[in-house]
Image: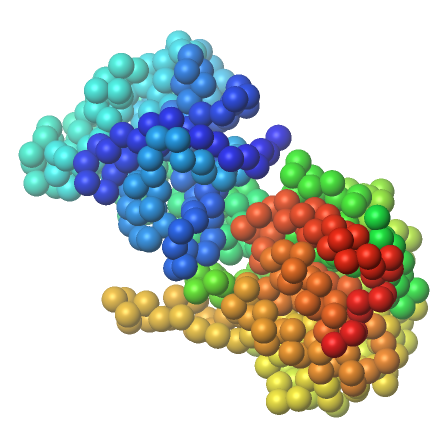
Length: 254
Length: 301
């Protein structure tokens, strides 16, 4: 069931300049939402911003009935979102798309690889995996230490490994340079820049590990009707907004 | 509550608000957000005789008060529609029409003939105005002879309500409208998207994979409104107006300009429930102004 509602901004947490977590709430209890699903937000107040902005679900706090969105200001629309204030309303369409799939076998050891703001959906996914008795391990990459956001939250749900291009935190280089990849995992889940996800997918295919990737193609409708956000798959062009954003990498034409 | 019912050929619409092809899927994508049975009609995604993959990504660019797209008629073909989609839409209490496209008059006619066999599809909208395909599409909508040839071929094999969707990318849209009317079209809908372009100056390339795309959204409304006004005066068949309609005021402008019905397209992306607001808004305005029948405002400018 999709919802279209004005949600209230309860708090805005500025993680670093240009990066904010919006904590949204509603009088009604939030519906079930899969990790990896996203919200289409209407942005008012900018003549340059016409379409809704798709933002992935960072976390759902059932105790406080909060929906968290981690927003990186990359353009006018997202810039306005990072400058929202407590008490503001945001018109949201949610939850959209197909999220990450929970493992069907119990007690799985799982590697969640994120890059940049692509780490956002892995926090909620990690929590649900931990709650279900699995062992999530996070591998997060960035240019520098400051790019690896929400570290203390990730550490609540599993072991945290990092790579930075300048070596300011943990292993120097890209996520694929980290020694954690030498360990055994039942599956890998990834979200981040496409070159990173392609490298992760290639690694998973080589080692015959099941792997899902969450794509962020440019979208208009978010409902699978405009067919603008397509990705080439083994079954032809498919909508990232409705049939994704999470795909089994074996289905992608990568 | 004013009388909102209008007719397009033999087709009765409970109100003049329809959804534009390619912006509302097959309707069921919006079922959680919209009471589909309240719509005047749904025009489903452009359908061709054979499946089409469409153009490469990127297919979309945001513009000031609008967007460009170059989807290129991606669809699974008419047989897929008849076998799988039809069952999901045939019991809706609104009119479900299929937008038909092709690369030759024979293609259009064959596709239309297969849809004619579906009992609960009372009409089609012939798309001779897609700007994003190399073969066919808009090339049929930019000359009177080509437009007439497609409509003639389809009319011979399609007995139900036939709407022809016109391209604004022409010198004189009224000539094309008259040409398709002469071949037996029951109605014309206009406008399809305006051809446009957007360039990323940092990457020094077009934002669209095929270079150009079709512009839609509020930015095209004044152009669409002018063309509807011109065409409504040039033909006797009913005109369906579309192009940037986002609220009841926009819809009323098109009705006054001569449109018997209107379609809402890109606005569905901004507010998926906009169609319901437009129906309610038209009704409220008519009541507030003591207008008992919507026909009393149609074509009054």
